[in-house]
Figure 1 (cartoon, helix red, strand yellow):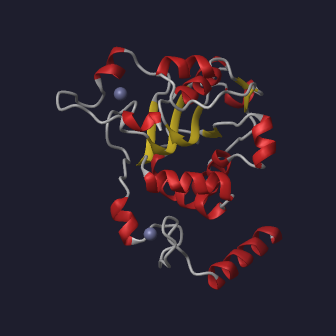
Figure 2 (cartoon, rainbow, N blue to C red):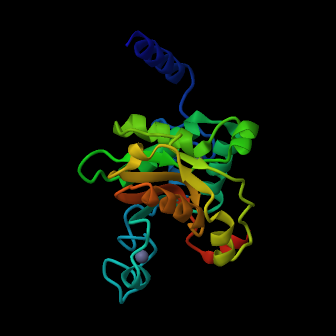
Length: 245
Ligand SMILES: [Zn+2]
Ligand SMILES: [Zn+2]
């Protein structure tokens, strides 16, 4: 309690000492952890639009779910991303990864929070894990930082340890979707089944490309008994040509 109060004072002091800045361009803004007007206009917010299951834009002939999800319901029951992947949103993800910026995680959580929809009891927030060698090299998992900010903001539990990446996976850039699927197959394990059994798990990721990593995570979680797996990410690749970069 005292520690929390002290932290609150320290944060308030910091907020007082340092004016909030736009996380993309760095100019001073009035509202902490939000974009300035110019950057905000540039960001393509995705929100709850698109297919009810996968979140991809719907064709004019489709109603709530896209033809792909209707034909075969996806393993991840609901996928949402705050923004479309572009230079601005990917720049933020890179700053989070290599700059260890808690403020960036807080900004992402702010825009991701409305997309986490509790379905009855509070879901368990689970960040997509890094392999331990990568974790040691980087010192932290960027998705775990975002998950802990979301947990604080929404009052939902987060567990960065329940899912484990058992082997290092190659960089997926430039691979076809079947190559990606093969590269991450079986790379994840649930450490403690009782944590996920019968629960809704919301996977938290920074950038969603083809979704093969999240799919592999979902497969491990469902095998361990999770009732439902959803995914909320910061940015999502909406134009397939960006996958090859
Ligand atoms: Zn800005
Ligand atoms: Zn769909």
